[in-house]
Length: 360
Image (cartoon, rainbow, N blue to C red; front, side):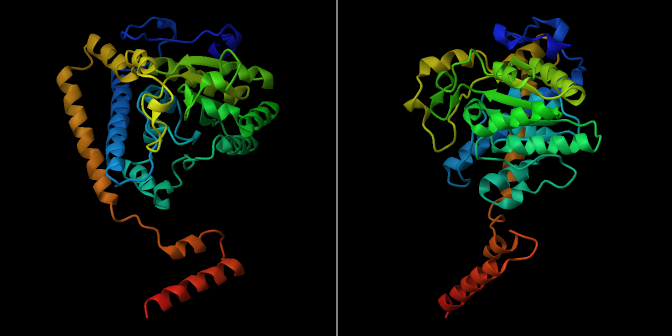
């Protein structure tokens, strides 16, 4: 089995498709119909279009601080496409492509970045936890969900995402250790985009890669080309199957954050254009486009049509939530507990009295 065959100590990286869109490892190519490959591309393109629109809207002051996804679409969409509807996904804050696959709507995504808690209300049918900003704190939650699934005898897995910087947090190690001891059906997915805000991976770890960290906890670790959607899909599928049968797996998706960490960040302060330039040739979107064009699954005219269509969809979604997402102050007090505590009731009463005085 793929997962058991890989040794992260050898520091090899699994790749199916190279930068020119050529299949270099046909044995690992996922069994996909042409329509499914096109769906992967469309989802990646939609994610990139939404990402671009969100960045523009934030710069106009129409969204709050935003975390760009440029360059990481294959890692997100490839891993998300491997999930069953009943599998759980526990994300950090940079998994836009996966969110779309799991069913988080564009309207809700914009509503979240607009600053409304209602953006995180997915509905019970979507097995997706809300965005978690505190780094790696969500990994412990993922282990809890997986343990519950195991107790119930369910054949579902839980994938949990973090970044390379997340591996330096205590909860990363606690979650992996707990999952390995109890053999929970977890897949831990690291989007190694080379930088934790301004700190490069070389200052996060002395290990030769991040996948090797799995060995200390007694679980398999595997490194995959995070800009190769086919490789990410193949590895994640194998990891999910292994997790359900045997226990947790750690995946390192080796990719690159082309833009800023968030819209509050200036990457020119800590990296040079020379460091970024080689990754432009490894763009996951261009790689898949080359494959599709070479195999007559897509035409240049189709690309422009899709871009225009997704741009219109993104802006229509934003306009549907703009000026409608403000949270009522009373809701801040009323949703902490099923019943407000005496302290919250007192605070709410003080607030309402203040409002009344200010209106006289």
